[in-house]
Image 1 (cartoon, rainbow, N blue to C red):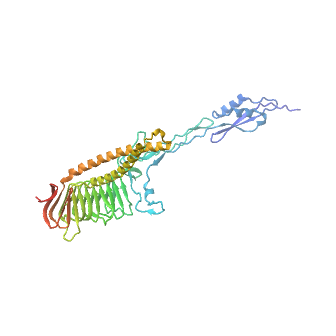
Image 2: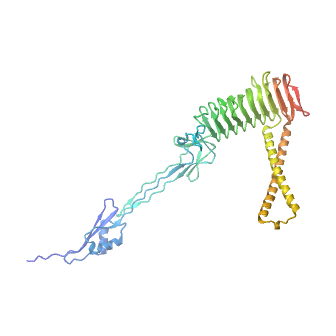
Image 3: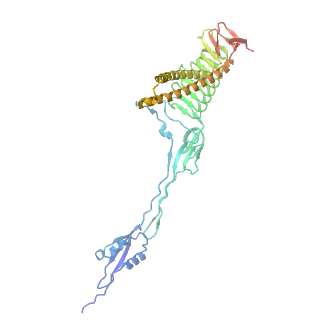
Length: 468
């Protein structure tokens, strides 16, 4: 007896990967005259399996071909999540861990005086640039399940004292002039630069925009510059100190004929010895100025318990005063008042520049005059000669204007110097022979000890009056 085989239609099975990111379809062919599965049947199988995303319909058509029956084929792919991009902070200054090393010079040598330990910043200067994180893009599985991306890390601005963010919180700015530091992970700007010890090889040179306070000394060969005031508890020893404000030295200045101490304000110290000092304000010394070159636009006063000026050259715009000036055994002491040292130097520079430019101006004038005598028309000159003549005429006009400006500036300085003819020198005890006194254009040499005297200018001569 013959067994009759039943018919079987074609069908499809769907397999989904464990992570849900891929779906595979296997089409099985019909048997015994059954019907093949069609596209509608495949789509129904995918729906029953929950596959709703990333279906590649071209692949479904391939699955229906008989040569692909009984073989699983990838028909749907999920979309992976795109992780967010971390934000970042870009410091616009060198962090301390990278700055504590000496500067290497062009010849390969190392300058241990320049360690770059302290970083000055100005109000409004950019300190940190912040890039916000970029959000990630969610993914999705073939069954429609959302995949959350990893969020990018956000780094907030490390805002410390005396710093401010911009409006969109992407920049950290200095709120004041000062020096920048990182304190407990925060960027901080300090107004006063504190040096706990001395300025030496441990600190290197200092170039700071604000005020500086030094607990120790400023040692020989080092340089300190400041945009504000400087306070030194110890001694300035043969160093270069240049500030825009005042200088206060609790001890004194021992120059050793090296360096320079220069202030845009005034200088206060116990003593000055073998040093060069230039200030725009006053020099106030409590004990002595010895063998030094000191200039002040206003006054030099040495009026403490000792109050001695011995040797050197002192220049002041208005007044020099001390208890004792000179010494029976000292070398010559030169005092000059009524002549602003900086104005006098400025006048000298202007005069030299005027002479140089006047010489060039006269040379050009002579050439132009010689050309005019030839009566040659400019149209008859070669192109090269025309260019040379045009340049010469431009130089002539420019030099003429510069000479007029220099003369005007020189006259301004002369007027100011004439106004300062009322300088004076006060001696509250004794001025000794060997002291040379200049007030304005008049000069007086002390040949005998003089006590309690006031030196002034009267009728073009230095006059001595009793000190009241």
